[in-house]
Length: 335
Image 1 (cartoon, rainbow, N blue to C red):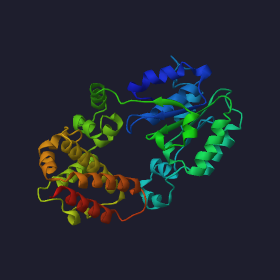
Image 2: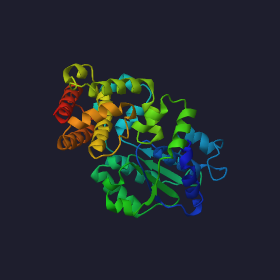
Image 3: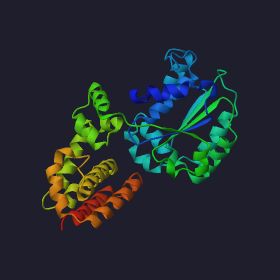
Image 4: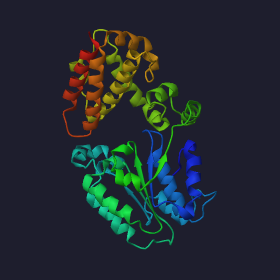
């Protein structure tokens, strides 16, 4: 595992404290900047038996186990739905996704307590990465708190969160905060170019400067769907909800909500005498839409989209949800 190059200085600073590493870290920052990769790189480097300049060597037995996801002194805790999505062949089993948990359950946290009670296999560190920390069930959060209050020796627990304020204050207070930043625009664009991303500038703008999110948004299927949504939002006579929503499934609904959120944010910026930030290729259309839009309805739509995004992973009728959101968009932008 390799942390993003823009996070390497922060990683090296932490690893310089290896003999006095905090027992718990809370890694936070905006989505799509590489926080989970940072946490995994930290864990691998702590477990490495022959680190080079404090970083994992990639060659020792420990690194080989880590790369094969079977290191005996490492655990990664995620919601069941995330495990399903990452598993090979998950698309073929998509019908079962709705039954998978979207939260981290108390049984998963209790398994951590059993894990840390064991002696380490290699007489070194033990590492646990838990993400997204905001998905902890209340009972699971309280169970984790007990472990943080009585930290086991030679164990580092890394919580990764987009929104750390959603965690219990008592959990935050027992973790050392590591706040990660997005790289400067020029560095992000260079990284995207080296990764082979197409239309990198547009993707980075849409991602709000987050390079890993931009790389995903630059994928052909993402670009094609985004163009379809933007074309619908750009119609002078308003979106056509019924025809647009035909064929929209849960995955497409989530992507639609993201595009609509960024589009509405640009409209709100224009209503506040600021410049658009995300859809730079559609500035003229956005200005025309903003002139007709009503601020209070845009704000209400923004709240509705936020709630829709929160619920999009739950079982629902994606087509009806897409129709409803496009109708709400028309109400906000057609005076």
